Length: 335
Image 1 (cartoon, rainbow, N blue to C red):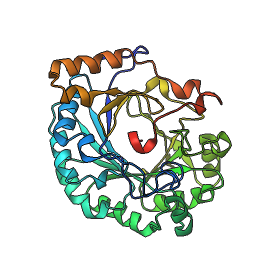
Image 2: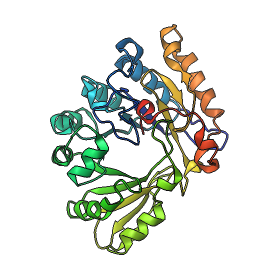
Image 3: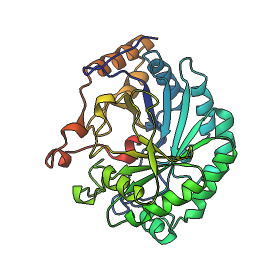
Image 4: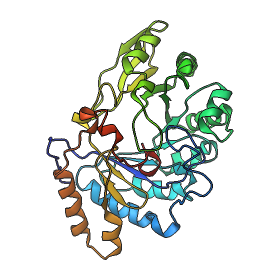
């Protein structure tokens, strides 16, 4: 294994792989229904990376220090036979963790197979415990109980579970304390994510952001939180726990308390483009290299070169003007 550093001395440690651009939700902050309607041109089968191509690329990334792979989408559980891919990724030399981000709808069906295949943790998106609010967010009439069933099935299968809540002012901020109360009682980690300006279709405005400090202060009025020491360089969430327990509450604050300086994540899109930042506008087409007959050495050299030239720090330099620039959609690149 060869460690590789970017221009800001950040190592390559994490690879997030989007396995599909499709999703069964139409959340306003990610895939608004008026944009991603019935006639939206999702990718065709021959445009997306095959399992063989994903594994080949993951093996090359592992040579440069990647230890953790997270499978994302869209909704990754819409990709057929996903546990087969998980098993192959888990077997790669150097890969210590394979995790999954999901909306939880299909988790009850697949939790055991995912665990058996090698998934160690699932991050489940849930933005409210109130059915009316939740259905207004997902725009597909999916109830909270469906997602909770997936969460509990994953826990019962032996998977570590973290619940992610995107908080948008005026949409679901009234749900913060009920979420804290519920997941504290269930001893499940809950993480709050600041509403981000990812992509160009979600109508992001800074006035809709509830900051990490505001969230922390809101919770601290009712619950005693104490800080938890960072586990590793590049950890995204600022972690706390309920005093006297092991139950954690985390905050992912990419808008108001940025963490670009320790970002160790590369992202691989569904169609095989490499992005070195969640807020990037363009990626490098690795799929074309694979399908044009490039050798492993040539592809690996390209990965190394792209990372060594990396200088991304969008969140640190975000301005009112820069946030209007064209960026890839969350549904295309995953979280």
